[in-house]
Image 1 (tube, rainbow, N blue to C red):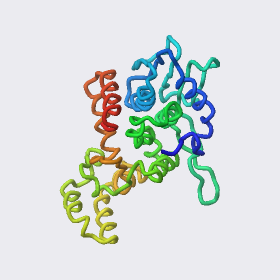
Image 2 (cartoon, helix red, strand yellow):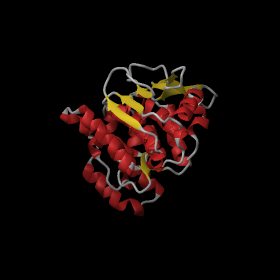
Image 3 (cartoon, one colour):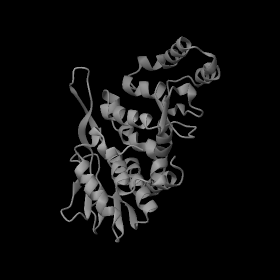
Length: 285
C-alpha cells in the first residue's frame, strides 16, 4: 500500500497525523476512541482500531457525543466541524474533523478542492500507527467511503474522491468496473434502474464489443437523466465506476447502503458497533 501521508492530498494534515501516529504506536495506556454513533463515526473508528488491534496497543471504543474525559484519546468530530485534525500539546489527545483540501488540478492548473473526510484521515493515521496491519489492508477500499457519504458528489465533481479512488486503483487495492461486472449489485442505490434490464445486460456483457457495452450502459442509465437525482457525478460512479475490493462480490456503494440500514432500528450505538466489528472481521459489511 502506498503511504497516504506522502500523498499531496494529505499534505495539510501530514505533520499532525504523523506525530499522533508515532505517539500512539508506543502507548502503554489504553487509548480512548470516541466517535458519534453514526455511520461516518463507525467508518472512521474502524481503521484506527484495526491498526491498534494488530499492533497490540490497548484501546477502548466508545460511541457517544460529548468530549473525552480521559487521555490518551482520539476524538472524531461531527460534520459541523471542519477544522481538520488537532493534536494536544502533550500529544496525548487527537481530535479529527474534516477539512477542505486540494484534490486535483484542472487542465489549466487551477486547484480543485474537496473534503478530506475523517474517514480518509483515519486511514492515514492508522497506517502511520502500524503500516503492516492486515486488518487495515483488508479495509483499504473503504478509504473513499467518507466522501461517498458526503454531499459533494450530489452537487458537483469531488476531486478528493477521484484522487483517492485513483490511488487505490493504481496500488491494486481495488478494481473499478461498470455495474454489469458486479456479481451482486444492489439496485436500491439506483431505484430508477430496471433490474430485469440490468440482469439481461449482465448475462450478455462478455459477448459485447466496446461499442455495445457503451450503448447498453447508456440505455440503463437513461431513466436517471430525467430525474433531479442522482447527480451526474454520482450516476457516473454508480454505473461506470463501481469499486470492488479483492474477492468482493458486491461493490462499495452497495456495502455502504447495507451498512446504513443497521441504523433503521434506532439502536445507533449497536449499529455503529456492528459496522466496526464487521470491518475488523471481514473488511466488508
